[in-house]
Image (cartoon, rainbow, N blue to C red; front, side, top):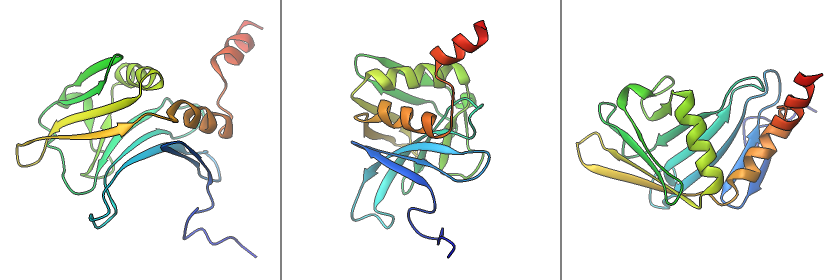
Amino acid sequence: MAADCSKAPFCETRAYFTDWLAACRPGEPRYCSVNTYVHNQSAPAGIDYQLRVARPDPQSPLNVSLIAVERFATTSKEMIFDIPGQANLVVAPEKLSTPESVNEYVVKDPAIVAELVNAMKKGYTLAIRFTDEDGNPASAHFSLMGFTLALSFIDEEADVPSPARQARSEAN
């Protein structure tokens, strides 16, 4: 009997790491992501924001995106990623994109993504500050507890070479 992929867990390999859900879709290429949410039981979707760090396939770099459910961000203003004690990254509008939908804001600069992910691995919380579509200040706050383990899980599931293994294989 074929699996019903129309409902959770959608035929994905999934695991929870404290505040993060790690999920990998079946098939090739192996799309994997780690996700966390700002929960709001009174919101129609049950959340206000989602933070996603994804690897579209094992050879691709990571992508970082904020998904707004109710309160959208303006794309003409900067977005600030603040990880206390680790980083305060100001991302200019031209370094953000909305390639898939109007409510998903993707950091498109690989150097910023790398710096952000490294800081997220060391931090405890992340605040994303932005200007909403009405011109008002807004923010979304996320826990980073479990982020590093979730990221390791998807890399293992997708057979992404670890930096140490990759360096050894390139030396041979």
